[in-house]
Amino acid sequence: PISAFLFDLDGVIVDTAVFHYQAWRRMANELGFDISHEFNETLKGVSRMDSLDLILAHGGVTLTDERKLELATQKNDWYLELVSRMTPNDILPGVAGFFHQLKHAQPPLKTALGSVSKNARLILERIHMVDQFDAIIDGTKITRGKPDPEVFLNGAAELGVAPADCVVFEDAVAGVEAAKRAGMFAVGIGSPDVLTEADLVVPSLEHLTVTELLAAVERAQG
Ligand code: G6P
Ligand code: MG
Image (tube, rainbow, N blue to C red; front, side, top):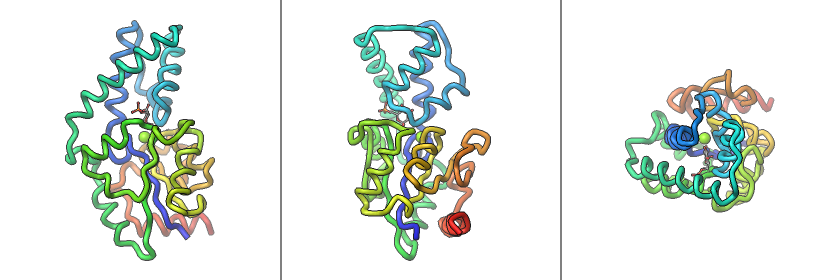
């Protein structure tokens, strides 16, 4: 039976996906090109350096490793400027209610954060949600970003739960792929046209109850 929920952070718990896009866009503009909203979908869930490589290839720019490190640091500084203004008010609609429900679920559900971001803990601190998770897997604990399943498999292992008994919540194409490769049920947060591989897609956690979700998993797993 399902016994753990694994949550992505950026775009699921908070809308930092927008901050990442703003910061990367600012960097791209300084290099003389732009990145579209559509292209940005391919960056979600992808690690900082992998994102930079994708963006530079997109703009047809080749740089030394040293310069790349400078740019990644600059982007992160811009990003952290936006993060520093975050408060618990930035928690996305439906998240608090959903956590309230899952904390009261019977049989009980464990929770983990599964984010590739090295800033994940800092963000959880800013929104006062550190204590909501039984395990926190972030960019400092993994070697491979999504779509590699490492982050979610580590989460399941730290919780002591079998991957097949985990549900993942993801806004990213790469994140849904990571969840499926980990052998987990994937709930997409966003549009079904984008998150085509997800087992279930909702526009936000406002549109889902824990009871409904567990019933949907049961139906899917027969
Ligand atoms: C998340 C975001 C990505 C971001 C990555 C690394 O997966 O969806 O857009 O690139 O984390 O974040 P970081 O905060 O370490 O740069
Ligand atoms: Mg995300």
